[in-house]
Image 1 (tube, rainbow, N blue to C red):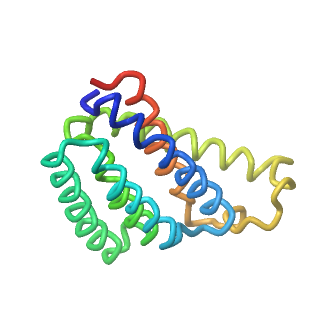
Image 2 (image 1 turned 180 degrees about the horizontal axis):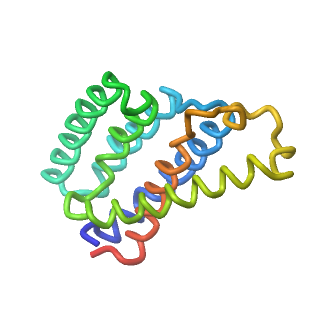
Length: 164
């Protein structure tokens, strides 16, 4: 992995709880809140100064801007939800540019796991544990925060162990 183990270890304790909240809240309400996105962005802005060389820090902030613009276009075209687009932008600075292929593999695994887990829970007695969650009654929409939050947390966790 291109991410350094040291930077992944700096980010992980701050980012993982946010990712788990994104997963929980998207399952419960089908929303990724602006406050959560701002918190994730703030973590990078502050912790990134300590975790990364300054030049790389600036490039990672550029990644945020580029992904945000792409997300706005995709959301406007109806290809993705607004919360997912904002989460991708907020998560982009945490990703080393050379890890795109690795990130894609992690995302595919997390998306598959999220779909299977959500569908099993939705159609079994597990649903009774949280009967008021909005996602159970969705037929067209899927709580992508499950896959997105899991991907970022897993990427940083793997980076902490296998990073350069």
